Image 1 (cartoon, rainbow, N blue to C red):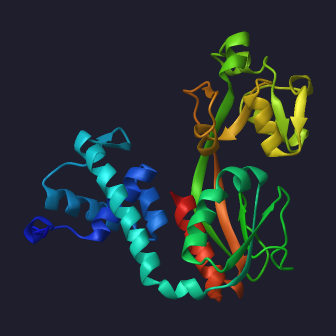
Image 2 (cartoon, helix red, strand yellow):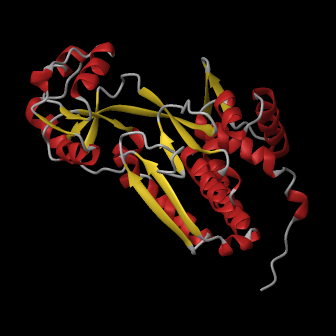
Image 3 (cartoon, rainbow, N blue to C red):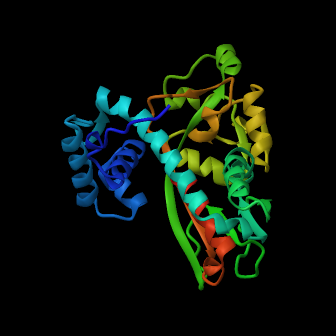
Length: 299
């Protein structure tokens, strides 16, 4: 069957669509401008141009924040599909990437390595099936200068010379516990009530207590009857009902059986930095992996 395209109905451009998608995903023109490497006024003009072209209102202002209108929410579903197709077009157009081979070593925390990287690596494998991907799941900082890794995903910016760092996202985290745990002890309504509960610790205990105390949750060592240096093990302990912990929202959202504690509380935020050696950034295989990681993590 021959499909007849109505060319006159397509009166917007992809840059406007990208600006709308980034603003909807990030929640503000300024945050969208950062991920698109543009200025805030430029993003605002592109969204306004898309609204004019379509004859609809996509966002409404509520205080200082932007909120999608019902029309905006409906269009967002189709725009996300467009973005997926655009990604596939880019990968197909760069068919020479099939010839990219060699090893790329990525280091990230154990949590990110287990719960976030696999789906990104799936796209990398499709784009360059001859690549060898080595994931170094480590919570300590591996030295890119000494080639212990080609690309590092970290929550602090590297200060070493000859390294390129890119801020790809500001992630959010909240307190979480299993529903079974909360049903047995009750759901805390205040930070003081929360501080009387059992916590699951991971990493350095003193550092974690200091972090929580500074956030207004007066926990002490007696709160941490169960802990592990390994974040994955600690998160499984949370899932099994041993207590409360702070977790990246993206990981918690894909974990059945856990729920947010003090859901109205403002989130913890932390940056996600991509770092590689300035020499490696020009290598095609490193550049391709770096760019795919950047695109996924910024979403």
